[in-house]
Length: 363
Image (tube, rainbow, N blue to C red):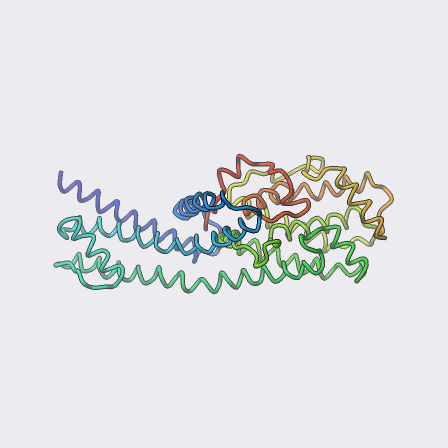
């Protein structure tokens, strides 16, 4: 019976260590999205604490200051979580191999993991475990240190475009404001470089925000800015130009919309947000016809050239918007994005799904 108990303790300890290593590899090394239960649990628990901390907050800016810590703190919490899992796992293996009491096994495990060296075993098997645990502890710490520059580099690239958009689309960003400013300052024929820039931005966003999913919760330096609302403004602007603006059709706008909705869908899939991967052009969207008409009238008053058939323009706009409507609003809800037209001001269409997936399913 004693031997069986030791076998179970060794197997359970080994499984815990393997889970910690697998979680670290998926979080920082594997160059693709991969579900990890350890990181999901960490971020879920932390989100509950942040939700409690936000209850007495008054106004969005106070909540934003609190939530600004969520992504970085969640990322840093992963390291002690992995170290604790490794410590407990090796403790079970040390005890199973005859390290003495559970307390003795805990001291040897902690001493090895933190490379303190004040407690050691007395035979070869324990010594091998000590060396392997010390090596593993150093690797886990090095992984986090090495990948922090990568994370902040991706964050800086993302925010550079978001900040530049404020000059072109206002704050909060608006698709109609973007179109009107280009009409007034640059001319609508000069939108092509903007579409090219944001196609690249969406491609980088998809890669970085699924492989390093904590980035989704890294908030912009300014409370009124958000990568989600910026993405929505650009996608809506491209959809409006294609559907309603009387200018020569630019295929680059089509490519930008496609890159955008594919990126948002990939991030939404990573968090388990339910959406239709093949929506019909006639499926309902969260933007109403009345809102579209108001935007149409607003642009007409400012001299934007509009197509003759408003009904057809609405149908075409809805046909573009349906590709990203649900995931855009879901991500705005998950990230607690600041108020912006046609994105974070919408009623969440998948509240039940969002409640199930609120914290990140980190890579």
